[in-house]
Image 1 (cartoon, each protein chain N blue to C red):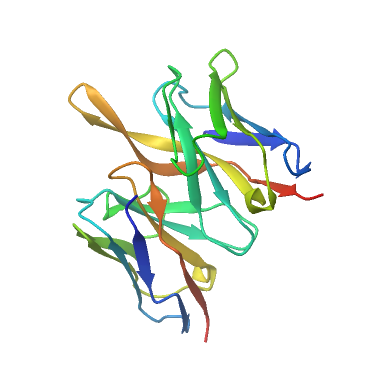
Image 2: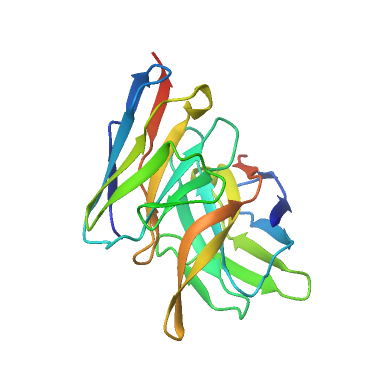
Amino acid sequence: QVQLQQWGAGLLKPSETLSLTCAVYGGSFSDYYWSWIRQPPGKGLEWIGEITHRGRTRYNPSLKSRVTISVDTSKNQFSLKLNSVTAADTAVYYCARGQILWFGELSSPGAFDTWGQGTMVTASS
Amino acid sequence: DIQMTQSPSALSASIGDRVTITCRAGQNIDNYLAWYQQKPGGAPKLLIYKASSLESGVPSRFSGSGSGTEFTLTISSLHPDDFATYYCQQYNSYSFTFGPGTKVDIK
């Protein structure tokens, strides 16, 4: 049974860098896509970006200039950094596992079938 | 980005009711649609993927249908555990987008 355990600082000042890490326990790390998703208080879900075990990344264009997602395959972990945070970045941040869809030799991400517990990050002076 | 809409935004229902939630995509997403259930303070839980495939361990009272731009999630007989917010999500193209959610509460 795969589990995602995430951690990171929960209180930041504006202009600081958000940093979160997600560890994957159980299951394969190489056969899935790994994403970060956030949810502002009382609002809906926003996909931030994803990474594969090979380090290939895709980002939401609305956040691309401030986001870096990285992977450490030796530890089965992936991380999120978001620069220059403002109050608008206040949200619960989730890591999630994306199913993999195969089209011949090409793959594409599918639905998010496993989620971390979430980390509330507040950006406030 | 592909815009996702859901209707209704909220509904009140009784135990045993049949509940249907509609999700519409701003363009054709084939059947690359998922449904999630989220309870207060918890992470979303995958219910349905590829529009109509039931995730392992999810009760069979949940079902999904549709393709292209219009999709539905149906709960055949509402259980006490089903009061939650439901989100649809497209994964046809980047960047992935979610619907705004439908809150199901007790009548």
